[in-house]
Length: 263
Image (cartoon, rainbow, N blue to C red; front, side, top):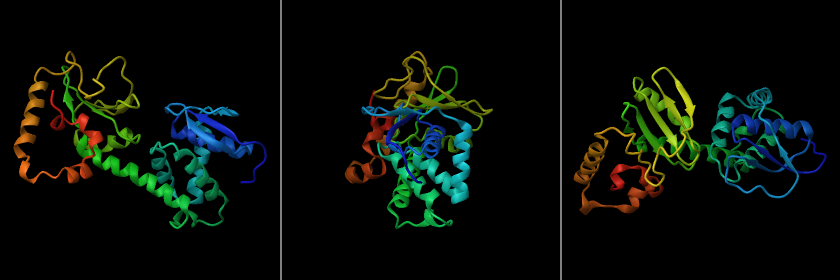
């Protein structure tokens, strides 16, 4: 992309469509970003020439088509998954990658793992996918008084939407909610479909992820104790290997696992 004009700091709403709208605006205006910041992140916006980009589904769709035409749909999916990594460097990494993708002739750039941008993009997507796989086993549901099953999670990456297909397949006839307490939204399944929800008030104890006493089912405390008792009974203390346990089940996830916390 040929560049003219100053560098600016772009801000957007944190969504993938919002990011693609930033890409579209930067290419159209020929003003490349010095930085790209999500307004839903906790990052402090530096002083500078701020361009706040409004999400435009039409512009986002054009960028999607451009990525697919320059590579393929699988690579487009990879870009969208990598965006969920939500590190401080992710947005600029993806922007620089897309600049190279659109500039490179032919259809092979995105397959070149020796290119640092391609490699970093693939690694970001792998980190997201790895955490999704982990949370297939780390989600712990609690039953509410109205017979819904609720789970709190606090993942490093924005993976709650990617968890939905797995749990829809496992529990197609139950109402359940998986809620990301850090990002303050969740995915609700009501047997007829999925929807994104935000909870008002303090539905969870933020330290433990435990739903409030007035909301949880009467026997939920008993089920929690039974789960802890089962975990203790199958745990062989003489063969305890804390290092290996943390490798498979990082300690930062323990606060939402009833077997690793005592009420």
